[in-house]
Image (cartoon, rainbow, N blue to C red):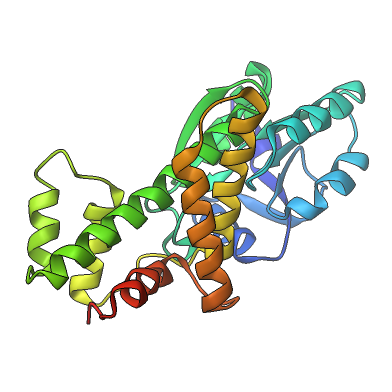
Length: 265
């Protein structure tokens, strides 16, 4: 029997993330309503989380699609549980929302009961759905994925810059790296895009810096090393200030170009 209570989702937020989710949900045949009047409430604006949680009744499930602190997720989950509601952290990692759901993943944390309801609905949106563990685990995984993705991009751009200055062709470097142990998300997507003059991301550079900062903070809490993430955070934060509020991940190439006095194009 079809569970009609999950065919309608409430959506909180009026940003690019909310627009991408709404578009894909309607493609999947889901009804999307603005606000909290559904059993499943997807939150695309982190600033609204507390207000949403405060107004929910028993039986509702809040699904946080934004990157955030796992400690905050645990607190919200406890507050909701006291009222018979549930919380799932399912932050989306997607460097190009304009192309969602391609190369996108929901990283989920929550109770098994809540996840059994939430993950099939998220799966209808087309992105990969990964269950990471209990409440907060999705945010931890999202911090790791975000940090690794940015670091991969940086080292790929630096390597490509060095090769370019030494006479190599960007497309050739991409082809070679994709066939060796140096292969990563940067060599798969960034280098071909540079060679072909395409964009690879619409993620704000400031958000990438925030991803790195959260990774560093979580590492410090447990005494884990975060030397590379710390260095990358400083570089990305500086680049976001220099490039301005409209800068995206693609503008990281400018950091390498300015540092070496050349342009890939």
